Image 1 (cartoon, helix red, strand yellow):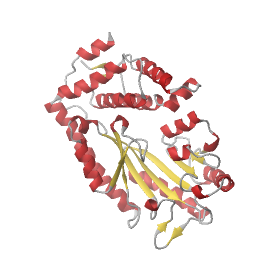
Image 2 (cartoon, one colour):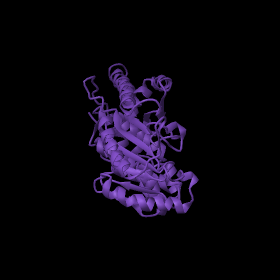
Image 3 (cartoon, rainbow, N blue to C red):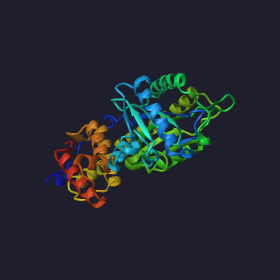
Image 4 (tube, rainbow, N blue to C red):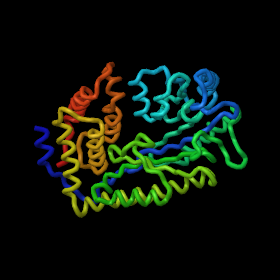
Length: 353
């Protein structure tokens, strides 16, 4: 039995194993508004539609988004909106809006512009790892093109004007997504998160504001947007996140050297549960996949790659599950389908001997 094998096999653990990438991805987001139009929350449907109609086609053709296409978010079904949220292409706020909301997204999904979320435009660039500088350069280039066409709401004293006062100034939110299961296993996570709060950095889950850190993934971002330039904000964030990555790497090395059984139990238990479970909720599944990600990164698993982990992280979520099956499922049925899918996809995965 696979479950039995997963529980009794003990791979050789050494401190020379790779400790993983830790920083999974980064994002730069710029909030911009039109000077002669009310904020989306204050505008009626006709005004919002007018902005989408006027802006979407120009953005797709002239903003520099490779292979861009326009998505009329307000006209999508619930499952498709959930799928876009799960892929971090739109926010939950935009998903909940009706007519007069839109998205322009590049073919590789790394560059996008949300239209009529909280602000008229939310320019977003996502890059792998910690390459925030590159993400900022791409976002800045798109912003420059848009600034030449649209008349932004801007104050010489305050900077860019936004619907939420916390974004006034640069309008910049930069973030890095980090996987911190090692710090959780060494019981050091809470102290690290408290330190980030003292540094006035925001720490959120994968879904952004208000979300939980499912899968031990944490989004670390700047909170200050006023009184600093973009380069300083990004540089400060990278310095702090670099320290967090260093602490997570040290935590993983301590596990390898001092308590390898804790690490092995975490990975083996997650694999055993996935390979036998018949019901699996989303957050539970993400937590188990977090353990498998750590197992892959530290070379404790056979026949599984990081790309396969990341594919599963997407495909077990509600929107992706329902789109794959082509039908709307109630939560209890999704939990059964999710468990079946994960058992099938991970049937051949095993601990290294």
